[in-house]
Length: 219
Image 1 (spheres, rainbow, N blue to C red):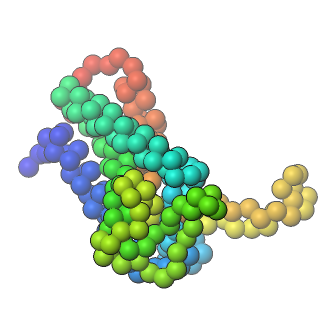
Image 2: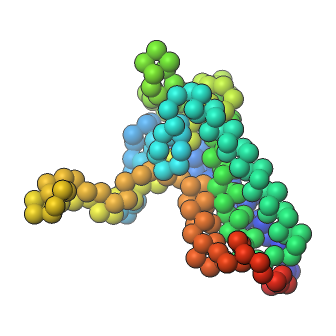
């Protein structure tokens, strides 16, 4: 049976959200902060960390910055969702629908952590206003609904780590000689990956159609 473009979009979003949330809950309820398991030697590691801010481990300082970022994400989700529905009604090509659905799914996956994980788990990374920094915790969290933070104050769970290159640069290399070089350093999650894949896919294959004038297609 051929899926409509709306059903295709819903399927992509539900699939990404399911995989993203299951992986995050399994990691958070079985790993302590900093715990890791080598999946493919030193190339692919499951490494548990919590991110209070932006994607790929970047931080947005302070609790008010955290809340502002979460509100911005919600506004972005609403805008992307509205635009996606508009394109579906206009019978836009499937490639663009798929790309935007991946971006929307990733954004939803991370806002779920931020909005609700503070309520769902008993422990998590929290902001200490006296120290003016984010404070980690000890042990393994439980899905107990006792809560560790308020609405929009939960932290995003990251676990995918690909330090494919980890070397000390030769002394003869200008500026970087003797320094440690690692690629890819950030720890991320399925939602981050979905956003990145969606963005690069649209830019590589549908940039002109997405941002320019183009005829509609039934494909």
